[in-house]
Image 1 (cartoon, rainbow, N blue to C red):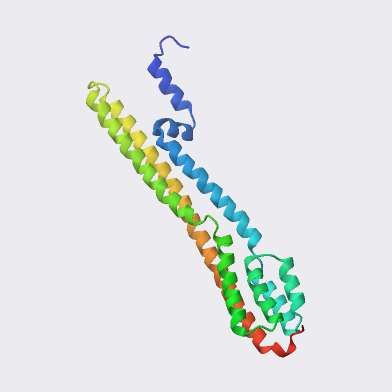
Image 2: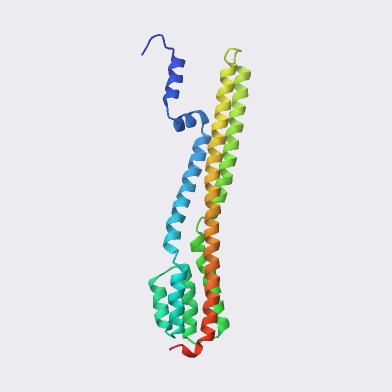
Length: 229
């Protein structure tokens, strides 16, 4: 090491050589790790929902075209088998109605069964999505906590420091505060945007299930004379 470089200068140089994220964590204090933990949870939920929603989705138009063609042809067993081969919330809802229709149950029972199926299947679609809103709010609050802690530490250090180092101590505290605020807001934005997108997808799925169940019931009612045992 160059003997003319003092220990404080060497420490500053080491921090400056870190990448941006490392420097932010070094300056942000322990609250940064709390926000990072929230970010990991949020990313886990986002990845889980992306995978699950893809596996639980079907092409509504293609599915309804196939099912309605089978119902019009009176072959409910084939329609039920088709639903079994394509498990998803939409197909499971339709299957409930088809099974009761095949057993010659009244229209009211068929509709009630499909409504119950919608309520039963929706939790599978929603999963842990609601926690993204929670994570977003907590990330903002954690960032605010880090900001307050940084400012408190800054003013305490300034009060105890000699005039030559007051500016340095103040800048450290402000850096602490701003790093926590920025990281908390970043995690919150990602969480809340993902929450909004997933909520849109969930609502669309529920609407498709309700719409398809009503269309199926109308089709069954108008084609009861064609239905095979």
